[in-house]
Length: 561
Ligand SMILES: Cc1cc2nc3c(=O)[nH]c(=O)nc-3n(C[C@H](O)[C@H](O)[C@H](O)COP(=O)(O)OP(=O)(O)OC[C@H]3O[C@@H](n4cnc5c(N)ncnc54)[C@H](O)[C@@H]3O)c2cc1C
Image (cartoon, rainbow, N blue to C red; front, side, top):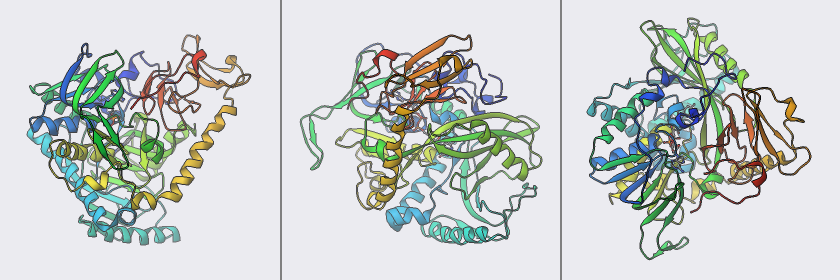
C-alpha cells in the first residue's frame, strides 16, 4: 500500500485486518511488506505438543525461540496472520530507560525490584542484538544513547522543577545498576529549531531495531527447526487446565495438562500453554488492573546524517518519543510518537498527527515529508511492571501482558523467564513479574486503581449516548453508534459504496458500548480496550469473539477459562 497521505480516507482491503490491527500502515511495511511475512497453514486436526504458544508477536516469537533453543517441542498458533498484532505497529525502542522512571519503580517495588527491572530490560535489549548476530538477521539493530529532556523551555521554572526530578531519576537509575548521567546544557546534535529544551538525562547502552525485519528472520529460522511448528488463522477460544487448583492455597488436584480449543473445534493438548496474546483473553483479574491507551506515530523524512541517531523522550505525561530508521539513499525516517489518550474516549485523530508533525518541525528544521501515520494500543499496569508468569489459579498456563510502554523488551525478557519456568530453571526475575502478585506494589497502587475503576465504570454512560441521530447522517466509510429508540445500541457502518452494515454495539467482553475510530476504521471499546474491524471481526482482546449481529446483542459469549 502507498504511504498514508492522510488519516481518514484509506480504502482498506477486506483482509487488511488480518495483516495488522488498524487501517493505517506503520512505517515498517516500507521494507517488509505484509507479503514478506512467513505464512503457515491453518490447523486442521486435534494435536498434542509440549508447549503451545498462542500469539505471534514479539512475546510469542521470543518465547518460542528460547524454548526451541532448549530442545523443547513448541507449537505456535495465531488467530490472524503472523506478526499482525501491536508488534507490527510499534516504534521499536529497546530501552532499559523505562518509561515510568526508576524513582517511581523503586517506590512500588523497592530498590531490589528496580535493580531486577533494569537488569532484565538491559538483558532483553542486548538479547535482540545477540540473536540477530547469531541468525545473521539484517534488522538495523544497533546500540545508541537515550536522552530524556524536559517538556518545558530552558530557563522556565517548570523546566527547573523537571530537572530536579530528573536528577533524582539519574540517581535511582544508577542505583539500579544503569549507566546514566545528568548533562546540563546538553542539546541533541541536529536539534536546530528555535525551541530550547536543553539539559538531558543520558542513558548509555540503549538499542533499537527494525521490528519486522528482526521477527521475520527469527520466524524463518524457527520454520526450519524440527521441534517447531506453527499455524495461522487458528484462534484459541478456550484454555483449561486439567484437574482442579484451589487458588488461595494453590493446591492442585489431578493431572496438569492444558487443553486449548480452537474456533474451528480442534483440541490442542499441551503440557504448558503460553498466552502471548498481548491482552489476556479473560473477563477480569489482570484486565481490570490495566489502563488502555491509544498512542500515535508519524514517520517523517530527515536527510541522512543530519540528526544524531539516538532515542529521545520528553517529560510530558503523554510524552513524545523519537528514533530513526532507514528510508532510502538520501533520507532516514524519524519516527515520532506520543499524544496518548484512553482508548475510545477521544476522537481528534488529525489533531494528534498534526501535533506530532508540528512538534518535530519546530525542533528539527530539516524534516521533510511525512510518509506514514499510524496508531496502536498500549497497556499500563498500575504498578508499572508487565505481568509475565503463571496465570491466576493455574500452574501450567502462563500469560505475558502489560507492556507499560516497554512491551518489546518485556516480550523478549518474557522469552527467557517463561522458558526458564517451563524447563524448571530458577530465574531471579520471576517474583517481580509474577501476574499473581498482590503484595506491596499493588497495595501502593490502590488509590490509583480505585480512580481507574471509577473512570472505567463511567464508560458505561455510553448506553445513554448517541453518535448519530439517523443512519442518513453517516458519510461513506464512516461509522457511529445509533442509540435513539432502543436500549440495545447499534453500531452502524456505511461502506465505500454507500451500503449500510449494522451490528450490535455491545462489546462481547464486558458489555461496554463500542466507539467508532475513524482513523483506524475500527470499533474500539472504551471499557477494557477490545477492538474490532469495521465489519466486526475481533482484532484485539480481551474480547475473543467478533461483534454480534444486531439482533443478538444480549448473547453471552467471551473467552472461557
Ligand atoms: C505505536 C506503538 C509504539 C510502541 N513503541 C514501543 C517501543 O518503542 N518500545 C517498546 O518496548 N514497546 C513499544 N510499544 C509496545 C510494544 O510494541 C507492544 O507491547 C508489543 O509489541 C506487544 O507484543 P505482544 O507479542 O505481546 O503482542 P502482539 O504483537 O499484539 O501479538 C499478539 C498476537 O496474538 C494474536 N492473538 C490474539 N488473540 C488470539 C487468540 N485467541 N488465538 C490466537 N492468536 C491470538 C494476535 O492476533 C497477535 O498477532 C509500542 C506500541 C505501539 C502501539
